[in-house]
Structures are given as C-alpha cells and as structure tokens.
Length: 296
Image (cartoon, rainbow, N blue to C red; front, side, top):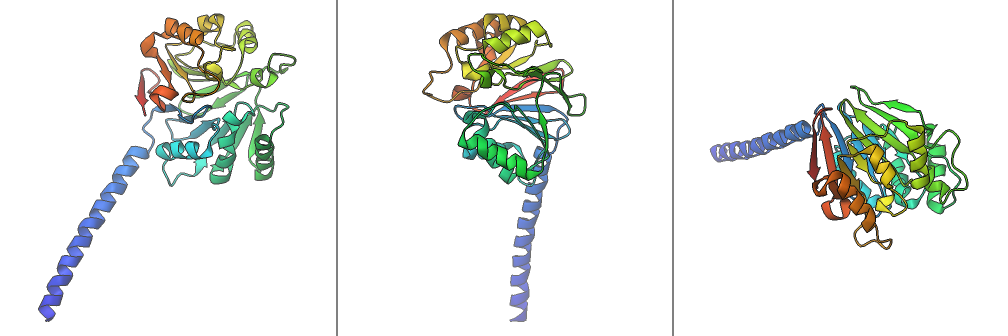
C-alpha cells in the first residue's frame, strides 16, 4: 500500500514538474518577444473610421497618438502590442477633439498610467470632449498644449517635433478644428514619419510656407484620405516613399477620395500605399537606417 502511494506521488510530481517547466518556458519566450529590441516600432492601428498610432521606442517607451472612435477596438490593438503587465503609457497625444480621434483616449486615461499629455487646446463642444477635459483635469497628469517648434526627446536619438498648430492658431478657415490639429514629425537618423492628423489644404499651405522640414519617409495621410487634404503641392514637398491611409471599411464619407489615392500612387507607387481598411494594422519597424513593414 505504501509503495503504491509512493509511486503514484512520483508520477504526479513529474507531471506537474513538466507542466511547470513548460509554463516557465512560455513566460521566458513571452519576455523575449515583448522586451525592447532596440528598434523603433510605429503601428498605424486598425480602429475603423478614425486615427490611432502607437509608437514603441528602442528603449521601450510607449507613445499613443490618438485613440480612434471605439475604445474596445483600441484596447484590443494595444493588448496585442503592449505586454499585459505594462500598464504605463509615457505620452498620450490628442491631435484634435473630434470623437474619431479622442473617444478611445478617454478609456485609456481610465485603464492606463499615463505619464504625460500633449494636446491641441481648441474651442470645441461635445460630450466626449467634455469627458476628456474632466479626466485630464482630475488626473494630475503633466500636460502640454501643442504648438509648432516643440520637440520631444524619446531617447536613443529618436525625436518628435511638433509642426502644427502654429503659435497663433488658425481662425476663420474652412475648419479651424481640423487645421489646428497636431502635426508631428518623428525621426531617427535616416527614417522619418509625418503624422498629419486631419489638417486641410489651408494648414498644408501654411506648413509649406513656414518650411519646418516636411520631407519624410512615411506619411500618415491626413483626414482619412479626404478630398480636403493631401494637395499636390504638399506631396511635392513631403515626397513620401510610403503612405498610409487610416480609414474604416465602407465608411459613410466615401473615404478615401479617388483623386487623393491617384496622387499618392503617383508619388509612392502602388506598393507604397497602404490602407487600414484593406491591410489592417500596419507596423513599421526601423533601426534608423532600414525600414520594414509588417501587416496585421
């Protein structure tokens, strides 16, 4: 009887030892795949008809630019790219107050430890925007109002510069909210990204005249490919090698505009144009010299 019990225990212990080793191995590999790899990762997230961009720096900092219209979609995308034990986001940037940019960020402020906020403080009224204002006011998070000329040092030589809104913000344009959106240029050595929010041709022309340095490797196309943006003059100055349109499937606005798509293809070629409604989330990975793209 005692011998039988002893043997049974031995088999039981070995089984759980193997399972424990497998579990430990899985954790180790999870750590390997989620720890910083020394490269810059820029993910244009598929969040439907809206904008959301996650930047993971070579040292592992998280920068979230906009949050799209759907908190659930955003949380799903973030969960695939940020380790489950990492609840911190170093910087949240709200490029403008419309719901297709800011709705997901409201939930981010509730679920994550946000270290800093950069945002466009423009006159606007909506229930989602009021909720955003109340949350950032009560959270005690370090805040900065975006203006051209500001620069964020993300370490390892990675920097992000604010190009828009201008010091004296736009008034009386076709859409002051759109034109005062936060335009950012992220750069690391030879590779650069231009994030253009929802700015229209008026803001594009102003950027061309101010010449803050627009040429970029990757262009996140403004306003989901709307006819109001991505003018030929602007594309001539930016000269992107790759362009990405963040847009929802069968959206009610008819985005992207066919003429805009044609202009982009002329500049980047067919293989250089991506769309989240067709390609899903696009992750760009760079070591500062070469650039790779990984589709969803």
